[in-house]
Length: 137
Image (cartoon, rainbow, N blue to C red; front, side, top):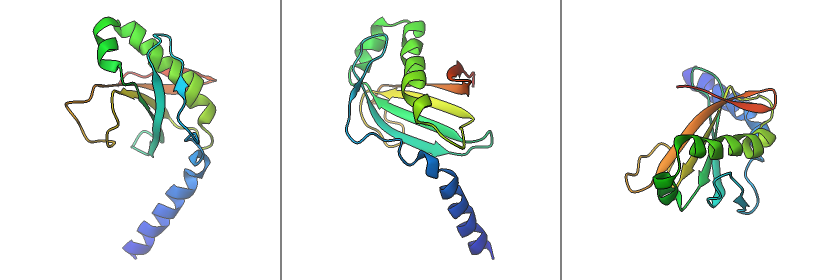
């Protein structure tokens, strides 16, 4: 019985996220952000924590360590917010996520695995009527 329930839950979960299947671009493209740092899309990770569906858009920013030394928090957040509005929002569909997390990483990493040699930053946003509202953790 438990195996059937788990299989059904996995199937239902997969079907719920079917609308997100075409989130990844066919080829990497450099994206424009306010700071001018080079950024490319890396991957999308979907999960469903207790607060609802979360869409995590992960981007590579190879020059992130240098930009972290000279950007203020406000300038860095402008890059993250811009990626949320210009990249993530147009790529979400039903069910709309409760939260969108935008992350920048200086190199590819496995999701959820810390790497002290890789600079990483992230912010969470709530999709609200075509915009991204900053979400305090």
